[in-house]
Amino acid sequence: MSSLDFTFRLQPKQKDFRASLEKYPVTLYGGAKGGGKSKGLRDIMLERRLRFPGSVGYIFRKTYPELDKNHIQPLLKEYPQLRPYWHAGRRILLLPNGSELGFGYVEHAKDLEKYQGVEFHDLGIEEAGEWPEQFISTLWGSNRSSKAGIPARLALTANPGGQAHQYLKR
Image (cartoon, rainbow, N blue to C red; front, side):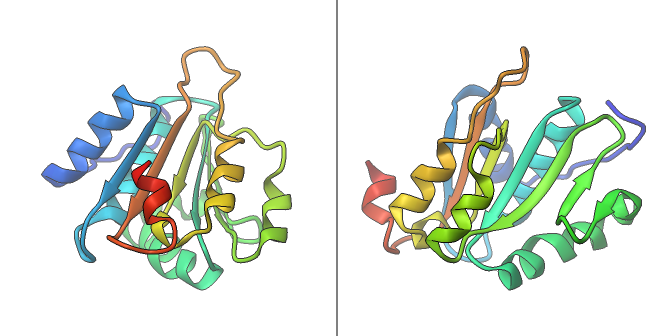
């Protein structure tokens, strides 16, 4: 652990999400709006950054306003002790243990180029059902780990339906 100390209070379904991520390389946490998927993803990603020094995790949404409203602002409000580590221009937390928690968006296919060749130990894609299949599979190609002891994990959240619904079911 780093010098940052947190207590993560996960709801039962969020704990199931975390347990699945510990066991399986890909986990989808689905359900209706308001079920705590975003907060669960955010807390689990932060928890894993603290547990695995030198690891990289990224949370993606389709647009920057969604990302800011659903993840960045809530994270900094809930954990104000993270503000000194926040680099707004890069949309990334650079933690004292060498881990990074970044926030990205992919609104258009050309946005994927920014993440080409990047290694994400943990990749979180929010509202995955609303994403084109190509966007998900392209980002998933960067979800890998070359560091011993840090397993790569893909965490997806989704509401029922959307353009990628059938892809996610497969």
